[in-house]
Amino acid sequence: MKTILPLLFFLISLYSFAQTGPGGVGTNDGTSSLVSWYRPDNGISVTGSLIDSWTNSAGISALDISETGIQRPTLITNAVNGYDEVSFNGSNRLRTGLTLTTSNFVTNQASSFIVTKADNTTQTSSVYTTDPLVGSTRFSNHIPWAGTVYYDIGTCCGSSARIQVGSLTGLTSYSIWSYDAHPSSGKQLYRNESLLQSRANTSTYNSHASQRFNLGANTSGSNGFVGDVTELIIFRTKVNTAQRLIIDNYLAAKYGETLSVNDLYTQDDSGNGNFDHDVAGIGQTTDGTNHTDSRGTGIVRINTPSALSNGDFLFWGEETKDPTYVFSNDPINYTEQLSSKWRVSKVNDLGTVTVAFDITGMDLSGKQSCQPLQLVVDNDSDFSSPVVYDLTIVGATATATGVSFTDGDYFTLRYLDQIVWNGTSFFNGSGTANAPDNTDECLKFTVKSGATGTLTFDAHVREVEVESGGTITVSDGILLEVENQIEVNGTIDLLGEAQLIQNHTSTTSNSGTGELRIRQQGTVNLYNYNYWSAPVNRSGNWQIGYLEDANGVVNFTSAFDANPTTSPITLSNHWLYDFNAVSREYAVGIPYQQ
Image (cartoon, rainbow, N blue to C red; front, side):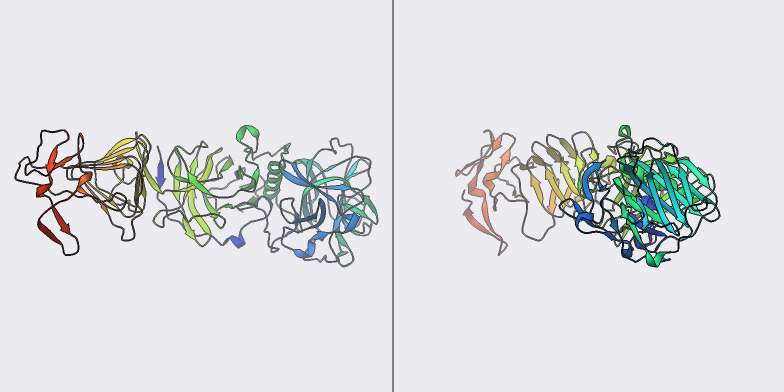
């Protein structure tokens, strides 16, 4: 059964302050410790397939990288789970200008993440490096250098500056390499979240003014890298454990990699629907570090967990890469539903959360102002029995608080635009059994094709559509009030004293090839008569000749007396008078002329 939760909503802090970095860690406007972020789905400029430049998605333009001529690497499109990769052949690179500073680059601490593979393990190269590569001070990695993986920070190459791991296999396949460095906690290197090495201490990098940052090497001190890169992320401070797990899960989902440990987001698996895109997360690890506000590369921001404790995590990812957000009718609940949806992985229970959507790219022109945009959460992808949260829209942000998720839940957005009778049930109305009532004047009322139904209570709706073969009967004494147009390709059947009233004042937009039936009972007497008229016209006019009884169109005679024994009945046109709608008078004694 559908559950609607009435809640008070408030607008959380503006989206410009949201965690818009990888997986929702850091920001993309240059104001956080995220200093470099090169991602294949943003900021790459090419000539043909050669990369001219790669914009820094961390928002620090001083660390944009570029090259010219034969130094340019190659963009391989749709290479890894639908995402592009950058291919280096040993004779090319991308690098910054002499624009490094202590405020926009690393010094004695850092966290870096790279998704890369080498074409061979015998090369002596750097995937990324400060340029030129010198021993006195550097920030570099080598995956591999003559078969061994190295990471260096500061004065090379003692244990305070270096991580060094040999005898690794699979270096010619993609891996997620995560590196942390901090003076108090030393240096750690992870491959697919598995810890390879931890060493004490760090050294300080201090050649900002005289060096560039270089991706691909091919510079003094290092041969060029031969291999491929999809994404590189650098923080100038060390991220905490929870943030590292979130970023690694984001990268694993995006590029179809499997984490050896801490694989917390599982909705990217093919059996779970491949919700691989725009993954972000919040949570807290067993060491007490946490991250409680994330948006990432998508439009969904989740924060403010009400009961966060060690081991609790919530991740979400989207099914569609590069989605176009449109609303279309859902044939199950007859709501207008967003074209994309998300799925969550939940570890333990962090309580309820606040969920906000950036609706900048959504066309909400079809949503009536009287109807809320709604967040719907369900344990199946058809949203047939959702929990529904009304959202508050302020500017370009739609927000709900107190939202509860269960592991594996789906969620999306919708709004109501119509009440539907499908032949079995009413949907979305405010009346008994979801039928329309007098409070539904901003919703359309639709009778589906072939469906036959009856209104037994007064109803006030925005417009009416009866599809082909559909019939809606309005019971005796019931009012169906319509604000705007009526489209009838089936039948509207008014019984007895039932009424159909349209309130619009503009030119009629009524349409359709169906019927409006008004069943009235006349007096059975040759010397009494009744007046009939219709609330709608047929092709711009209405005339008494359109009257029907149960057996068809009525007959007319010029004789004084009607004949009720014929089938259909026969009426005398002698006693039917013209009415002047301007003077509001009858032309007495002038018989009606067919």
